[in-house]
Length: 161
Image (tube, rainbow, N blue to C red; front, side):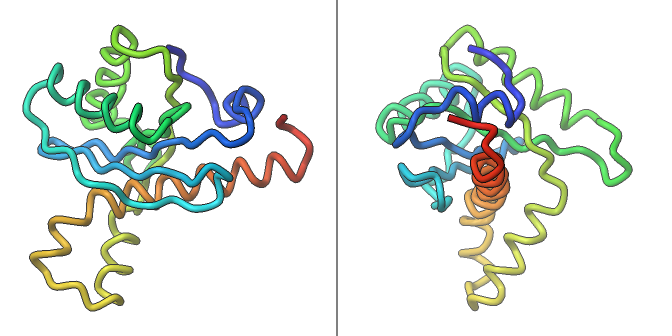
């Protein structure tokens, strides 16, 4: 497994390969998967965290089922651009995943993704209880959609494929 930049990922992806977005929390992992054309991010079932081995197996099982070629994981950078304990935990999670999968990971600045996801769910008139259940996967969709938009931009500029 490798940790790539979004530009490096753009050069390695083949056509018709889905990628997954992850929002790593302390209690759950939000999951979102792209379509094969990599235009749209769609939320999937939240993975309840138990311990690393179980979490990794659940994540890789979902990735295999969806035929995922790479992961884009939200990096919870502070608003001032510094990295705190949550960034360190995310980087540690990815380092541990190196032992489990050859699939590459891309870190993606996730500032305000949860806020944006919550606003959308409120606008959709989703109840508070259901928002709590869906927020992590919705945030993963925002993370993934940002990466998909960047990949599309790189393709337009001729920097991929």
